[in-house]
Image (cartoon, rainbow, N blue to C red; front, top):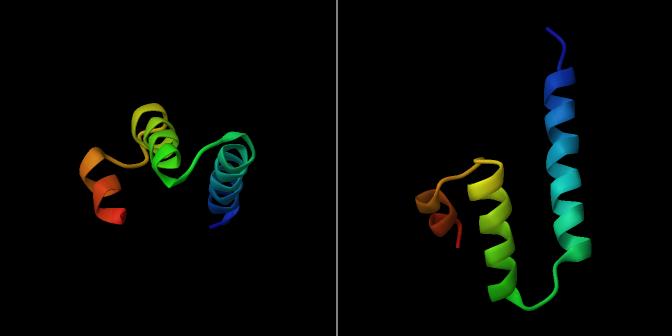
Length: 55
């Protein structure tokens, strides 16, 4: 089995973090809001509970 899917997933994660890193302004509290919007609401990679556990 090829790992092309995993490589594509890794690039997707890289692109999302690069976009957030280059376009997000503010301190840590502001970034948490941007991460919630992207990871919980838009992409559904995490739920609210899991995001809260990361901090």
